[in-house]
Image (cartoon, rainbow, N blue to C red; front, top):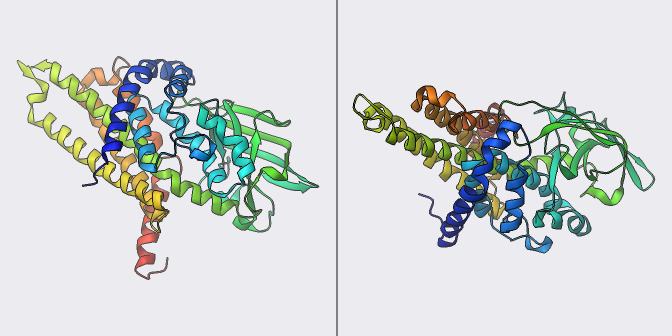
Length: 384
């Protein structure tokens, strides 16, 4: 069993109390109105939790990856959309933290750590989801600037972010070796927001198109080296996928907690529903799978902490397994509530809708299974 430190346990207690008091009351409204959870975001800032995902050199808390995972898990337990605004901002920040200049980090990241704004990660396009190398967005060098043209799709925090980390081709003939990464402010001339998606779940998190019409970006906002963007993108996802796993664990935990409370109170045939063996078996399966997923997520986060050789493999495992667990547990939670589970009077239907996205974004679970298989086979000297 993966054992948390006393500091991690105390942090979980603190963030859980905060989330139940300051985030949970706004979750239903954010979902119903499909509106960014402003009150929850402000609460994160006021409580000082906005800085948890960021290094101390930019004003963050220097929290380790496991503490960051606990933050996301406990937020997702009550409101997945709130956890997602944190995940998306950190996703946009990782390339700067790992490969950007110190000047760029000091320009962009202190505001994130202070909770002044959120950020976005612009990789996907309408014709380039999992196939990153087929992106068509261009960045053409013009003197001391780059000029970016194209469109990005499925961008979390679109229209709400102050900064966008953008991947574009600086050499269209070099396939994945021709991709570079840039940081673009929201008020850059030529940057606009296109269609915002109407989604099944995570409705409190805006998702939409970000359009670039000859957006001029100074070379100082190039992240790292030109032509290394593809590797930065993959390295970012290796570090972020365990966070999706943590979010999925939180959603699953919230669903089984809500369902357990319901079956304890609800009576049928002159007894509590929780006394039926069939219900107890559903609860047992849920808590076993959640605990297994949590352990795998923490193992992946530990690998991120030391930048170990299994980051890719464990990150894919954690994201894939935890997302599947979240989908299964939330589906069973709806079933345990019967007809009430299918209504918006209880949170489990929202959690079921939210869980589905965990199987899709940051690489579908089919992609993750391919990653896991290739990593395993390569370790045995088997080429694929």
